[in-house]
Image (tube, rainbow, N blue to C red; front, side, top):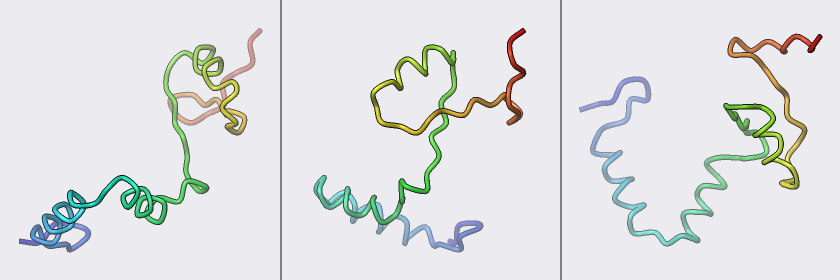
Length: 78
């Protein structure tokens, strides 16, 4: 049987998952670095902005960009 968009057989997915179960943490980290390049990633945080900004302090993350639920910059406080 073939999965939808990727055209990947269920058996292939099962074989890949079985193979990952035999890997140790170091090997999984190596694979993850190649599969998920974090330098091109986006971190989405949802919640009270003042709480999140406080928790982000000292983590070395880029400055946060606040957006509304529809992706717009919030209106300045009056």
